[in-house]
Amino acid sequence: MRKVYDFLVIGSGAAGLSFALKVAAKGRVALISKTTLDVTNTSFAQGGIAAVTYQPDNYEKHIRDTHIAGAFICDPKVVEQVITKAPAQIEQLLSWGTSFDKRADGNFDLHREGGHSEFRILHHLDNTGFEIQRALISQIKNHPNIDVYEKHFAIDIITQHHLGRANEPWMNDIRCYGAYVMDEQTNEVITFLSKFTMMATGGIGNVYQVTTNPVISTGDGIAMVFRAKGVIQNMEFVQFHPTSLYNPGETPSFLITEAMRGYGAVLRTQRGEEFMKKYDERGSLAPRDIVARAIDSEMKVTGDDFVYLDVTHKEAELTRQHFPMIYNKCLSLGIDITKDMIPVVPAAHYLCGGIKVDLNGRTSIRNLYAAGECSCTGLHGANRLASNSLLEALVYADVAATDSVAQLDGTEICNDIPQWNDEGTTHNEEMILVTQANKEVETIMSNYVGIVRSNLRLKRASDRLEIIYRETEELYQKSRVSKKLCELRNKINVGFLIIKMAQKRKESRGLHYTLDYPETNSSLDTYKL
Image (tube, rainbow, N blue to C red; front, side, top):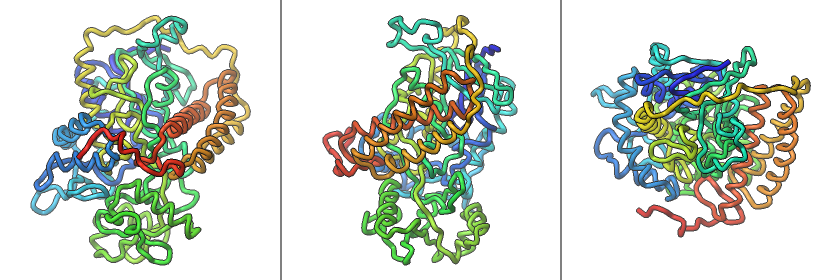
């Protein structure tokens, strides 16, 4: 089957949905959702969205905080663009029906999170992402120019390779013509053709054993672009959220928002000792990479499986009002956060690298854009400043929409694309091969390519992943395509990229900390305060 659209959007988080809404006035849009519209990384985001709204805050302070958190390798032009465009994106969200908490005087009730010098986090209780997702979905479902394809899985983007031109000199001018997408209910692979494709597939958390990401976060978009010879960047910078709820066996791990530390919560050992001041003068309000490494260090020294986050000193009713979802979740496990400390552990949370894009959201492949967590804009550098991610997704969806719409009339659909060909393949009867390989990938990445790394660990991870890669590719070539097999393949690609880029960085910076090069190479800084 073949379907033709002006715009193809792969992914249904804040980036994908807002891009779809902004281009739909100019053309027909196909929106691909791996599960349902409400299951995305956006919907799991508790903390909020950063934006300058009131004095004494200003753009310069937000820019400075972003560069400091990013270990001074953020792209200055990108940082300025995202932060100065923030107020307009907040107004757009409000116009789409998003609700942010306000004080009695009518002003936004702003939070402050780790790494921020001012109160600038707009939020909706402790489920801001869910509220943004709700408002966007409502707009999407009522738009006549947008066709939603839920439970559809994108296998690969379509380029000249699929036209039988693999040996021609087109590598410096790769073009995207759409994607092969599998209907998960019928297993039919549909050829989606489009003038422009937006990759907005979210994160990679499930490459690791413990993650706050939903199970769909398997790095699909990054892997697809990597296989199509697109440019990928900064994959070594994987952010581990310092405080996920310690509840063994629960997937994904429940996130205890950064905003709780901004509210006044303090990290303690299981013996009740506050420890963060040993690692950073900002204490529990230090940036996430520092806090995650500190917790990891304390757990290794003590042998404990978790540390505590203590908010019991705050006024109980105020805590319940600010964090109702966290309060109820913990209470369901017998933990009253107004009286009991919360057991927490670091968990894979956010990728600062991904598909390299320019200031307009263009990838290195023509007619292909990327936005959201799967992209690498240059905003985050070596470490994301808390609550900058939702903002980045919205800004880059906006600039990409403007850029693609401007080219719409001069871009043609390629009609020479062949249908998906699975001739000679058979159904894989041994899913245990996929299941076991998945576990091995997650174990390798968690044990060797986690919060703290070394040359030896990275070498072992690379060697073991190479074996799984060869076995999986052999299985893929002879098997009828399936979502689980494709996800495994994508996770292996992503793991490979993280390892190889970590091996190339001969320093510790931001989220990448290696025992062999513990110092930061200041000569590599691209921005000076």
